[in-house]
Length: 418
Image (cartoon, rainbow, N blue to C red; front, side, top):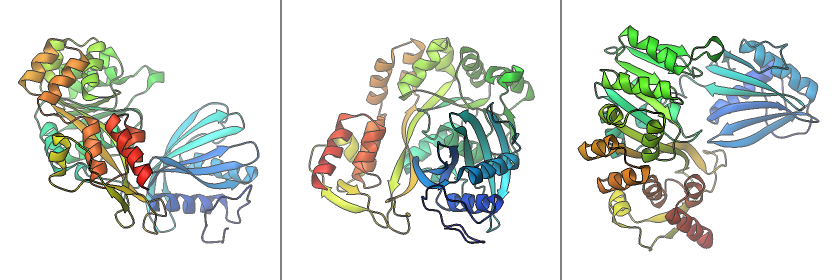
């Protein structure tokens, strides 16, 4: 229920709040940010307005508001973000800053689309203080982090970050840019849209309506003598070719691409008609990653030891640690979820002479992956299995994120022993 100064959020059908929408919005955003929610959703349904958050990658229902009150809340947030509050039949976007009751300033990126019952408003939340994570806080192992730092500190070349939607690619690029943003480099970012501002970095946004896409921006930026260029996404032949040309001609280019593995990311670049030898000459490495929920260290509970053969490669990653399976429990520190944070789990292809030669010869993705493994690359499933057996996440969580026989076996074992 609500009081004048505080909102307690719990699912109730069609509740009319006592607090005015402005106060409710401030309390709601503060509450969501304290729980490390990345997104806030305010959506019209048949009989009420649904309020939900995305926390650690999962949707959680917060409240069901009366339609009239929910409409006022939607209108307030649209005005706050600079979106046309009266435009309800077309998609709308906006940005803004909300000051919470505790004095924090939260950056909001709002998007609204029409639906069957009204509107669906999605708000990306970013806390400049608590939300900014340096690259060493993304969840990489020390050896993984060192490899990534070595890649992004090269003077020129192309580094690709691959993965599906929601795999943390943009966060990795932002953290990489912040690691390089020491005042000695001119850095440009090309984004769609701009997630949040980076002091000291030149940020440009794609504008498809104006005929300005990634390729156009990238071509223009090259005339500004940048040292580092971040490309939000490579999704067409022109952008791919220009990124390769920039990486080969003296700039460090960091870019994302949709692919399921490092080898498939290279194959995707070739499918975009980049010449194999040019790509081999420019590409420094590929980081293919997923986001996994990390068990709360305060309440996680061991299920059993793992006696099955996990192979020497995973055993080397464990470094003599006894392989175990753990389960989520829930406590006050993790708000009863059993999970405390999201962490990046990477597969890293650090190119050497043999891999560059293979790419230049245009080998298939399967052959490239086999060669990379022979050269020492740990596959994503192996890296993830090590995280599971160290008790950083659950086998079920890993099995849902990555299809692999070993992870499926570990998940089945955990269910039997739980």
